Image 1 (cartoon, rainbow, N blue to C red):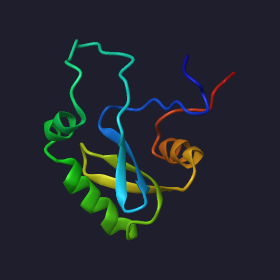
Image 2: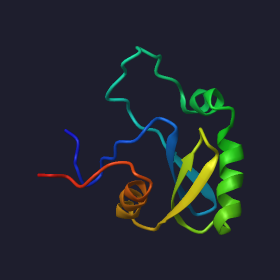
Image 3: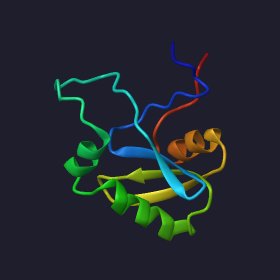
Length: 106
């Protein structure tokens, strides 16, 4: 069962990435709604479908904040990148700032 404190719902072209140590951890989610019966792509194929790669995104993320530790969001459709902060809750706050999601009514 999903936990509302760790679950985020966002379009497939918003990717959540965490900078840990000297590497990037791409958080690959699970679809919960697939109206067009599209295939479930690997992370690499998902990035390629939007004309980019995980390596290109990692380079862009490093440029926006010097590779600071924490969470980032990449809009791979519009090639826009955001630093969220060091806590998981910062991701949810940034998504709300971008107009995605709302407070849990429960």
